[in-house]
Amino acid sequence: MPRSSREKSSETRSNIIEAAYRLFVDNGYNATPMREISQQAGVTVGAIYNHFETKEDIWIEVLKTKHPYHEILPLLSEAKGEKMAEMVRSAARLLVVELRNRPDLFNLMFIEIVEFKALHIPVLVQLILPELFPLQQAFRGKSGRLRNIPLPILLRSFVGLFFSYYITGILMKDLPGITSDETSLDNFVDLYLNGILDEDDLSRKESA
Image (cartoon, rainbow, N blue to C red; front, side):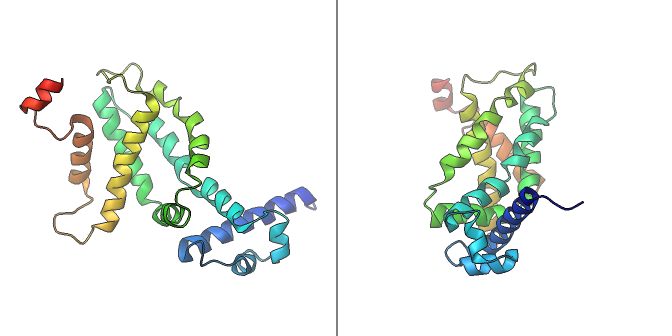
């Protein structure tokens, strides 16, 4: 059965996004000309402009399509455990495993932060926020008491800490004592749950 014009247009758009994604990850945004994107996608430069007004529009679509929040947020909802602490440990492992499966993420975020000065992060936030609130259901009914902290702040702190675990594991992998094994992940979880102060530290008791 012949494909419709809409189907062909959608396929062309997808091919452009996929080609641009590979080139951006390998070469960076500024070092990727439209000509190379057109060659990789198998279309003319003019055809690209039928779908995107600028190269930056292509980048925004790549960021929205390829950022792993699509996989990470559903994974966090699958965290297991009867206690809050068990849920956090389970979610941390799921998050780190998924991050390790996406070595391109470092390049994507590096491009966005360095080449665009994080200009498009609000676009991602607007996409992610509606998907945060169902996570509340995963933690309801679990034993343990969370502090009264807004859910977006909790999720930001959780993702931020373990994203830093992933990034520093890449940047500092050759330094003595820097590992990314199960023990180091458990230490990160303990740090997240309990902070850095010893239980007997007076300042910790004073602030309680």
